[in-house]
Image 1: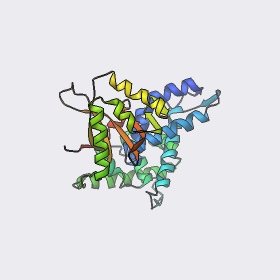
Image 2 (image 1 turned 30 degrees about the vertical axis):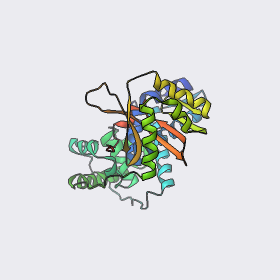
Image 3 (image 1 turned 120 degrees about the vertical axis):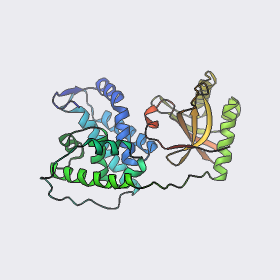
Image 4 (image 1 turned 90 degrees about the vertical axis):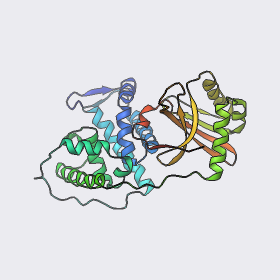
Length: 299
């Protein structure tokens, strides 16, 4: 990160920087939230707050740290709203602790799953992600979190120790399951989509439907959203199937022309009775797949 050159931020400059930093911002937010989906929500909140802060003549000495500070605060707000964090870390005077920012700790942190990070306190989680996953220095981490150097060293030390213990334990995770009604509705939606019967798909969407193609566009209302299905009808590089993303029911997008059948994106569909009221399409947000825990539904 550039820590020395002040930059004048107008909206175009900020939007260009946000586009470049978005994958890294998402990686931080997803690991803080324990979900690539919630992480994207926090990133979007960060983008809105950053754009609102720009007045056309704003000079920021360290713009990237400034953005990560906004993301850090947005993640904190998100976690408080979810009531996920019930304990506070007690700061101790650990100024004398050295920082062996060792490659072993970095490898453990980089390989750790989102679920492991969620077992760390918010403060420990943030310090480990910023230093060992994103590569910030201790001083840059202090700027992002607002903590003292002593507190940051202490928190990082404890977070690393806890993550090492978690990495040594076998992870036992119950396989997610689809509710029968959810599976019936989603299978019908997927089957119609794969059959390219988009008139039948349009018949399932509500008049007040909301659509977000992440990193591309937002549409509201049946008339506008109907054009979205036409975009899929014009291309052939997709096939849909049921699955889970971070334990949430999702529609997985694969390219049938690729031999490995890798997931290239996913959709989240929300229902009101038998009508689709919201679609979030992550086809153009590839960074959301990096840390995602994805599994397929058989059948």
